[in-house]
Image (cartoon, rainbow, N blue to C red; front, side, top):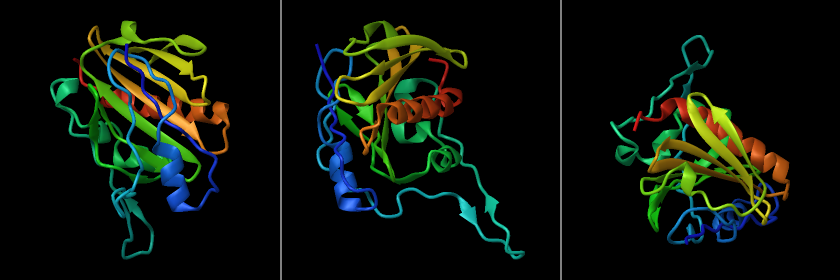
Length: 200
């Protein structure tokens, strides 16, 4: 079976190097069947996330919302496009990494001032394939079935079922070690991602 691992370390908020290193390196156990979700040391690209806010002649900001490039299927999508520019602003995401393939999953890591949220696309296993590694509950998000799991290492997952053989895994962690905050972030991100999902 496969497990995914991230470590959310307790680094001082505001110290960018510590945040990046603590948020993205190995120890959350995720479900599935295959390789571990380890992204190594995160070195976010400056300016890779924008808020879409620009000044106007009157001095009041105008917000441009960029829609994700929704493909016909989940396999056509980039995990970084699961959240729109407005979604990222709502989650107070400060920096993002480029999507990368980890095992059979495509993952995008987003950093916030207090932790991280990482959506991952799986096209080889659906919601029924979640391997439980902590307290888990069933829920519905929009028109999709979902499951939320608290990991034994302090993180939190929300799994969004798309088809019988595909899903989106949303992992969140909090630098302070607050698992309730991690679960709140994962759920908020999943609720924003859900309307952007394709039908298959």
